[in-house]
Amino acid sequence: MSSIRINSICPCDLTGETGFYIYLNSTVFQNAPNPINIDSLDIKNNTTGTTYSSATIPAVLTITGPVLVGVYWQIKVVFTDIVGVMPEGHYNITIKMDYTDSAGVAQNNKTFYLSKFSLCASEAQLQKDLADIVLSEKCIPENCQNLKDIFWEAYTLFRAMKIVDSCAVDIAWNNTYLKLIKLLAILKKEKCLNC
Image (cartoon, rainbow, N blue to C red):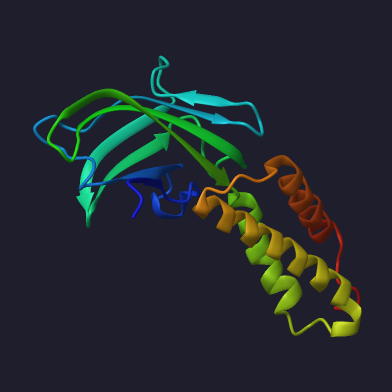
């Protein structure tokens, strides 16, 4: 069981806000006697070069929590300057926090480094393309097979990137991401003939 993890950074479960949750294993990160406190949180989208920080004035990140959810402390992070879907990319996250460790010892200003991919817009397009290209009964296979093949190639690449993200495996992010974006652009541009 991982001691610290981040859920998907798509806004699916934040009731319209854009952000993510950080989960801290409660057996490793204890909230007493030294309570869990995020001293600073810095996020950089390596794909776009954009940075976000809880230390800027005004802050572009709001942090609430922790709230105990099962065996994890849940900390909610919301981007105050992003509305809708978070920009896609490879995000590096630096967290500095105070907490009590499993031995009951206060830990202050400890730094943790995490990495996460955001593929929210790609996921939304693939969901639409699944219905429009693959599941549509309006398209007979001989007219749309090439588009269906491109869809499955894009979907396979997307799923591989999601699996790599959940396993924290290092990949050539930029090349893989660019290939996915090219395939999605073809799907968006091309239309199934005679459908």
